[in-house]
Image 1 (cartoon, rainbow, N blue to C red):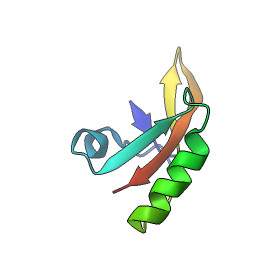
Image 2: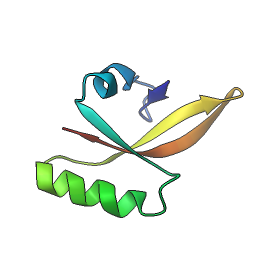
Image 3: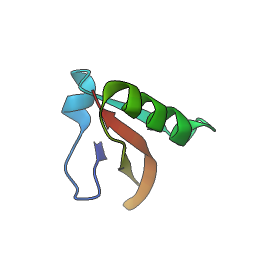
Image 4: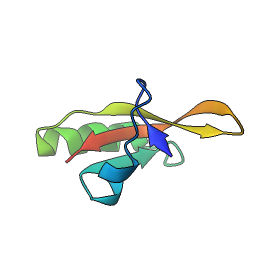
Length: 64
């Protein structure tokens, strides 16, 4: 489950292709997310997930 800093789930939007996640596992995730947001006229925001009862930063999400 992925969510915003306000704990609003973005899973459904990702499944529907309405939000794209740039995960921290990609070394250039921040630059790619910002570039994609500019191209789409959108905005990047932080996405989080819970691993073993701990909230961790998952990457940058961009609404399509």
